[in-house]
Image (cartoon, rainbow, N blue to C red; front, side, top):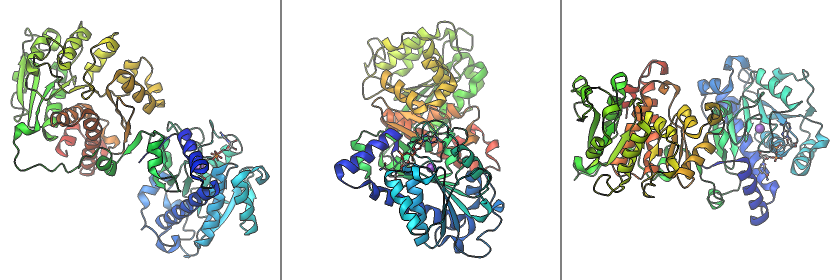
Length: 558
Ligand SMILES: NC(=O)C1=CN([C@@H]2O[C@H](COP(=O)(O)OP(=O)(O)OC[C@H]3O[C@@H](n4cnc5c(N)ncnc54)[C@H](O)[C@@H]3O)[C@@H](O)[C@H]2O)[C@@H](O)CC1
Ligand SMILES: [K+]
């Protein structure tokens, strides 16, 4: 579940070779076997059990989506006859190519057929890749050098992409670029060795061209780019294969970025997703969340947030809102309490005194501030006073304690406008604030463009979290949760159906609820993101199309 950069992977390779004493050829041999095994599984999935030589049952739809081509486009090669599948290994001149060439050898041993297509004249290969080239030649494995337009793709059943791995820089150059385009156009299922060639291993950006893989087998550890979009889409189904570099070495080398799936929720976050409850508990055990949210145009944001908080398990939830709005929403969330705040009859937050909200903080276990709040003159200074109160600063809650805090939506825009956030009082180290920006809000916080944020989601989120001492949840496909100590979780749940108004309000409510239940902020944020995505996946599965998903549906599946 570690997600490594190319540089971290190189350091780990070096350590194992130089300090542990395993020859690089051993790692390559393990990598090659893993690539060949993954190819056999892909063959079985794509063409059926009889052809793949054992493995998983057919699973066409996933592959069709990942591979960018329909199964029927492969025209029944192999599938009709039950003969061994014919793999074409595309080999670059680095160690990624070496993995592929060695995989051709393993495929033969496994009963498949394999040919090698060198992107460059094989004389250019050096080191372990050259060793593999020579062994393959002596074994009589058919090999050719790529010439544009000369490959008869129809005489193969599948492709192994071993052109470029973690050593590649920038967009694939010729002849790699043409070869990648031809492979993508072939309609054959492609297994990528380590990463699809053309993918930026660190950021998930894809160069033009980039291999569109049906499946990727990551060697030793998943590279960050396989978990981030758009790279994740080009990688197809991704698995990581052990090659002789134990996970604890990644920990020892300071790798702190993790892919957050259910196993990681249990092992890394220490949370049981079923969240069983002790019998001898009562609503006070599970905390009180105060949601300060909603305005005349966006009252629903508060409603979604407070309902989500309740579904996520807090004992009590109160909704603080401008008093003039209260009558309109009374009864809409019967389980929640209302905390109408004097608003001078305006119906929005512009006349709500920060002191009124401060008074509500007494006795609360978490504050969620921001969904549908709206903007008003002087709101950055207003936010500062609420921040101070939630920090437990003098004159704050009175109790002198910090109230766990989630800032979302307009509260983040206020924060972006506060030029002096760096000078605001720090919260206690064990109670950092949780900020939940979408990429546009993140861009405002760091004064850059949304495109820049998306180009390096992990880097931007982690940098902000460590510099400002907050938990930063950067929303979007593969939501990134960065902790003040530099730990980062990249989420795996969720679907594009959740790109709909109100989803973020639901997430803020979920995280606030988990905070109120006593989870540390980093855990509450990462688990909340995972839980929100999992609920979205269940909700989408219950509907005819992801497109029809509403934020309220996510709440029902929490
Ligand atoms: N000991 C190791 O280092 C191991 C490495 N392994 C494999 O080795 C890979 C990394 O190998 P390398 O560091 O040799 O690098 P790669 O095999 O990824 O590619 C490097 C080669 O590609 C060329 N190149 C770089 N950018 C290019 C571009 N944009 N267009 C065209 N050519 C370009 C370089 O000149 C160099 O010759 C991993 O991804 C993995 O597959 C595995 O075998 C496990 C062990
Ligand atoms: K590759």
